[in-house]
Length: 240
Image 1: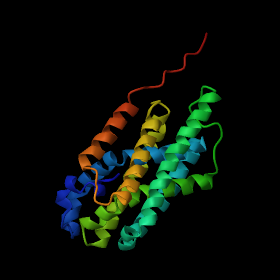
Image 2: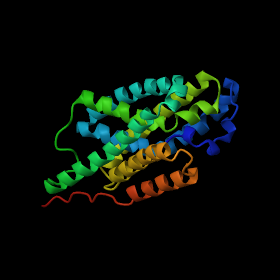
Image 3: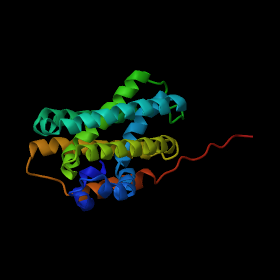
Image 4: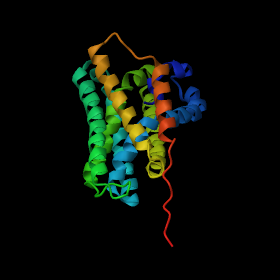
């Protein structure tokens, strides 16, 4: 989720069509993006974390989120087609659900052969990680592309909003990679949020006249984040 997906929280953006009107709002936009991209950031952090190497994780995030920016711009440029091409929304929802189910399956498998480490046993391909990062952000972006293009009729302003979003996402994803090693429930909380976005995308296709209220989405993500940060990993005690 990002700030563009919550039009009632950003009514001051309606009709903003000039740089002079947008610039004073940039700090607010950045703050909103940092808060509202938490679910997306956890998912990206969990994907990058499979490199099992801090340097590779950071590099994967840099490349993956850079590609994600261009994919967001492509979605904006093709917004009218995206909004009418329902299979894309279906694929995005299915992909996010697949991410969640993959996490559940891997979690169940690792619990059977647990070695006491929270890190993946072996890293996955660097290229596959970058592709997975870009696709994951793309799936999240499909959920908000309609609201993004509705904010302003000036393309450059909308693309600026997308740039702010990916910068905020890179920052929060880097933080979450470290936090995933500290808070034992955080990764699961993030993947549950991913599943909820996937269910939302698919349910809006099936029930086109039904929309979840924005407060419900915000409340659900907030509760998941509170739960995710509710349990810290016990520090290792070395025997003397």
